[in-house]
Every structure is written in C-alpha cells, then in structure tokens.
Length: 282
Image (cartoon, rainbow, N blue to C red; front, top):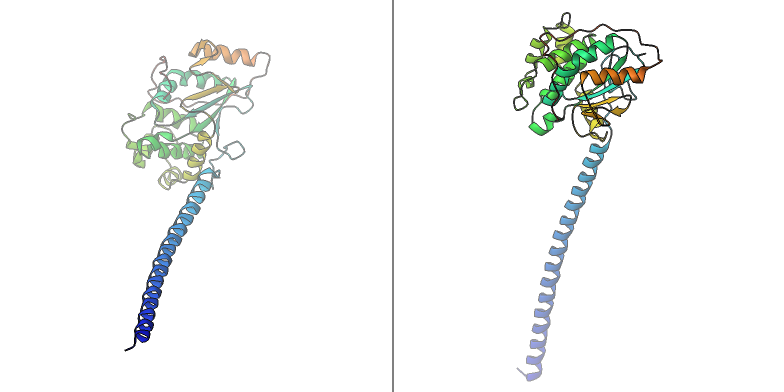
C-alpha cells in the first residue's frame, strides 16, 4: 500500500475518532441539560406549591356556619349580656388556657353581675392556639362546644362550667368529645339531641379555625386578653392593677351619665371558686 493511501486511511480514522468523541461530548452535554431541566422543573413546581400553600395560609378563612347570634363582619364573636349596655368587655380566651381559668375564677362573679345589671356586654373571642402548641384538639373541641351552647342559649352557663372544670394544660381529655357532653349535663336544658349532634359532628369546626386565624392577625399574643371599650385592662389599666373592685370602678366611670342596658339573666357555674388574684397571662 502506498504511503498516500495509508495517510488517507489514517486521516479518515482520525476524523472518525474525533467525530465519535464529539458525539459523546454532545451526548454527555445533552444529558446534563436534561437533568438540569428536570431539576429546574421540579424547583418550579416546588416554588409553585410553596406559593399556593402560602397563599392558602394568608387567605382569610370564612366559616361555612356561625353560631346563632354571632356578631362582627365575619360573625366570629359571641356576645353575652345586654346588647345595648353602655360598655363592652372584650375577652380573648382559650378553653385550655390555665391563666384564663384563673381570670374566670377571679372575675366571673363580677362580670356576671355587671352583665345582669345592664352595665356591660361581653364580646367573646374563643381561640384555640394551645392545641397548636401542645398538639392537641381539646381547645378546638371546647370552642366548638361553646358555639353549640350559644345555639342553645346557654353560652355563659357552659362557659363557666368549662372553666370551673378545666383540666391541666399538659393533659387533653377534651380531645374526647364525650367529656364535654358529660360537663354539659351540669347546665340545665343544654344536654339535648341537637347539642350532642352539634358537638359530635364538630359543626362549627370551620368557625373555630377562623376565630383562631383572626386572633393570629390581631396583634394580641396571649390569653386572656381583656379590653374595656377597646382599652387593655389585663393585667393593668394604666398603672392600676386589675381587681374585681377596680373593674367595677372602671365600668362605672365609663358608664357615668349613660343609660344602662336591658338586664340579661346569668347562669353561674356550679362550684365556682371564690375570687383570687389572677396569674400572669399564658
């Protein structure tokens, strides 16, 4: 074979090797691009899901059903007492909150009396954040049961019974709704088929979630949060410590010269403890 022919074959072979190497390089590059494209697609989906979840979290929740007589733009507040009372006591409470229990034991007789005298109307926001911190369901179940009691016209009486019989925060017996139904027997006229169905079916679960969401956005960070005509009074009003006597004095001062509301009857909790100084908020 001539040198010319051997050179031509070598050159062709070298071109073939070079082309094969180029093809392999292109193949590796395409695979990398394909993998990168898949990663980008996954990230895009993840970002999309994250945005959707965040959007869902920030979207105000509107309850499908609200308890009878609930007030406010989204009906998240349970009123208690004469609607035409000259002063409003706003209370944010969690059924499982131990500081709320101490507040109720100290002030429930005074608040009941002020309502019965037509001096105040209570606006109750029943929150359930302790469930979130303690991985429980008792706060939500208790809040739903209170909404059911509102339907039956027994909110205040059942509210007082729950706080008089509140379990330790570290326990969660109200995760069993039957425990709430047993407590309802202490309130005359509450233990009815309608009430039991409302509790067992968690009829106001969406409403309970919406109330908690509203609390999360309120700027308040603890319970009990107590306001008199929009001014915080717990644990102090200005430099004055709250006490039953001071609460009466503050209400009377706010009501001076104003007509009293139509009195509403109270249903005090059986076995309510005597007044005591409240503990710091939970």
